[in-house]
Amino acid sequence: MIYVISDLHGYPHEKFLQLLKSAGFCDDDFLYILGDVIDRNGDGGIKTLCWLLEQPNVQLILGNHEAMLLSCEFLFSEITDANIEGLTADKLEFYNTYCLNGGTETLGSLRKLPKDTQADIFDYLRDAPVYDAITVNSRDYLLVHAGLKNFSPDKKIPDYTPDELLWESPESGDEYYPDIVTVFGHTPTFSYGEEFRGKIIRTNTWTAIDTGAAYGEKPVLLRLDDGSEFTL
Image 1 (spheres, helix red, strand yellow):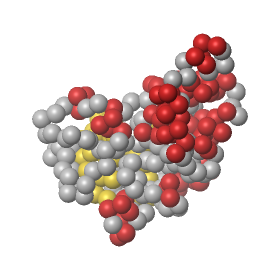
Image 2 (image 1 turned 180 degrees about the vertical axis):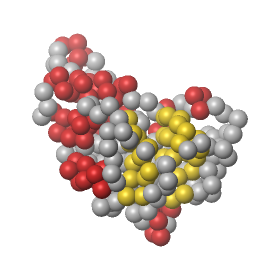
Image 3 (image 1 turned 90 degrees about the vertical axis):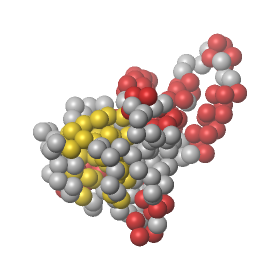
Image 4 (image 1 turned 45 degrees about the vertical axis):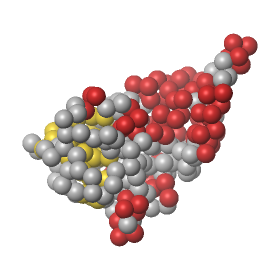
């Protein structure tokens, strides 16, 4: 079975594991997390990130919040004269932007970890893909964090830049590839109307699965094999 979820944003790790258990998720299944495990709440998602390092059947698709954390990796470098001289205005702006977007919790939790674990997390995030294309029960899916900015049906998926996949907020009337279901998070579904609060939205060409965990709503786990949804 193939499962997808997104935008946990510091959702309590124990509740996340309980959600997986409630869906019957096991070693023979595979889970895609479509970005934004971190920031905003609780421990900033660090416990879930550490768990991800050890999971052979779970794949994180990079989100814009993980990308922002990567841009602040310099904060965890050894303090040297060279590093201090390298603190450019751009780096300080990255840090300021990240904090304004809820990164304080994650940075605080990350600093408490051993240096080798910090390095493992940054290595893992650098290796995380910005999309994946899969087939489930003869149906093709594109898994991405935020949708497809500057979409064209003639544009090949590898031709999109990371920013086009990490920062887009699709409109409700947007349509993507007619023969591929694009599954994304990033934009809380309540942004499309209060009737969608806490709910997954499905259209003919895309499925939005950020149900607003960053803002106190419950995340929803979607099983692609049969369309079943699970929440606590």
